[in-house]
Length: 109
Image (cartoon, rainbow, N blue to C red; front, top):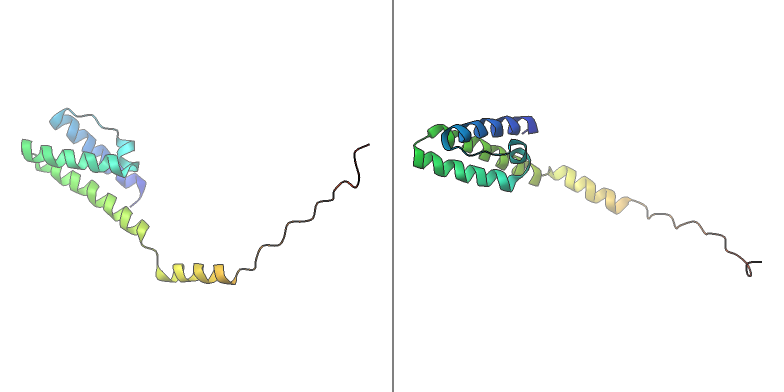
């Protein structure tokens, strides 16, 4: 999911949390830091149950889905890419030896 979509979801959740609970959040940090976002999701779901606010739970679910979608797509690579990388590493020629550096013969005058 693009970062702009995650930021939009985080901003919407921020506004809802501010209106319903008085809680102020950092939307940019929520869109980039998964640990912070998951804690906000947990808090929003808790307050959605306590305050009977289904829209809080809905937007928390959206953010949670966006985070898990990014985690699963980052963890999975196409098998063809993994195999091609392994073949390239095996077939790559060894790096050339470093060039020989001339040295002083004798001492400094």
